[in-house]
Length: 383
Image (tube, rainbow, N blue to C red; front, side, top):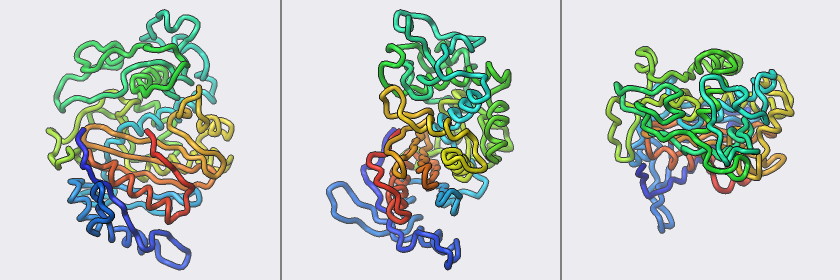
């Protein structure tokens, strides 16, 4: 993907929400004083958020801010409505991971069992690499299973779509290579969308349901994610309210978007509010509070680095105590997104956009929110 060689510093005079002010006031104020800084420049022109989005050719941005364990506010900017859905891209992986961990807590899956003991219609091919080192769910969720295929490009609307087995074996009409073990499982971290397609196969095997129905039961309904769908291609009623994806130069994708049959890796359509609701549920889980989606021990395990890598079980994690942060970035063709959570303090954010330039504005929003809401230092935002 091509990206603008600029960064945004978003300066909001009063971003926070206090008891004595209306909730609308700081949300309105965040649309002003956006500073575009070119590389090597000390400062740049200050624009309102709409002008900054025009400069970056971003048509729509959806934001939900979490503070003190609740969604403090949500807002969409640009050409979008409150029920507009976006491709959440690799945020799909964190959603999938939580659903898989719920199956672990029910005893249907095990983090450290050979996944071939649970798969039905497909198996991870045995090789010298897997002899004595089986692929496990822990390895798949933490990107340390030694599995290849970092990501997927999707398909033009109307193109033949592969089923899950064709995706896993890289057979036509799949346009991606086969999902295979390329390093000794557990030996190193390597980003792998292919590994999450194996997780999709595990969830379908254990629930005996198609992926959308399984996640609806395991996660969407319990959390209240009423605008989230693992449906590729979209049915007509949902397609009518889907944000259309755009290249970095503002050109709309042919047909509006790429179809992503690789559901667990990148096939989720959602809203920032839905994703923020999941983050709130994870924060409650971590602290052992009400409205939890996982037990406290499982939530703590999810947010611990696994196998000496940067990932926990579903997302990148760093820090400890009040500075512990869970992070996940999403990048499909035409869409970019980010979600972040400090589980101990119940602070975080979810951002969706319909542009290849979305990470630029998401990064700026995250940095500014960190200042105003007094988040701990984040450092490098991770995948």
